[in-house]
Image 1 (cartoon, rainbow, N blue to C red):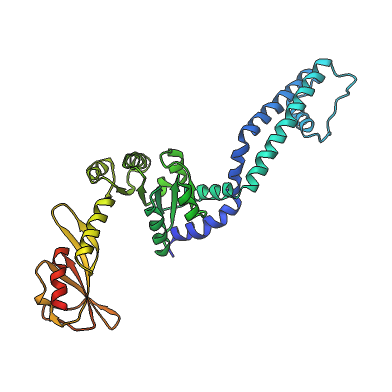
Image 2 (cartoon, helix red, strand yellow):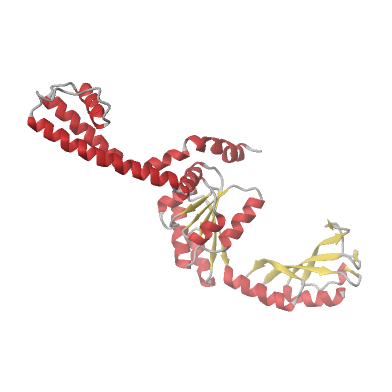
Length: 336
């Protein structure tokens, strides 16, 4: 295992036990800032009325608002203004503490917040991973395939349905159009991004923002409208897949031949697809139509890529070809 995989799968998982949970402090950052101001104001009161130095005044202020009681000026000698100031500030601090405790408890009991915090922390610290961005169902399929292939990835989606379907510590629920969410997913350190939004205009916007954050990043996008292909490439996408157009072609070719196995290249000028044929009648490969090329023969459960035009395929074997799918029907007739 290389160093990057070791970092992503072992070191990060160990570090996040200590580091990732601290992200919940963001929930009480405003209260902490206000509390710091309160400590300063109480310290200022002690400096002015009790004539303490600043270090002692801060120490006394912390004791007062935490009710530790290690410092307590003589109440009989305290001016009325000082008593009034301290009373108001202490009451305000009690309410502030209650708000902080409520926020922390709400965070601790909400499991989704912890999962999201870990996913964001991990995404920002991963290296050379793949970021899957969008709300299309194909994001789920892509994520599961990457998992099977052993590749590290982070998913960023605003779809609660997809989030629940993929739920885990590498899935972030957030708006993909928000730059901060893209950064949390680790776009700046990723090796590639897959973008598949519900709307092509959103896909274009996310592509532009991803390119802004990490220009060398390999970007694969899925669009519904084939006219968007050139626009996406201009925006910085390396590979653009016109989903509905390709699916329509695949459905059409599948209706023509049972041996159609998928498109590997598709353009307006030509189509190249893979066909898989069960051999029922032996023929020599040189007898195949000129628009298809044999690429492998399945014999006894093993793929054999070594052959020449004089090689004969026999009944019981399977033949894999590459070529024009409109010629597949002719190949079926030859082999049956």
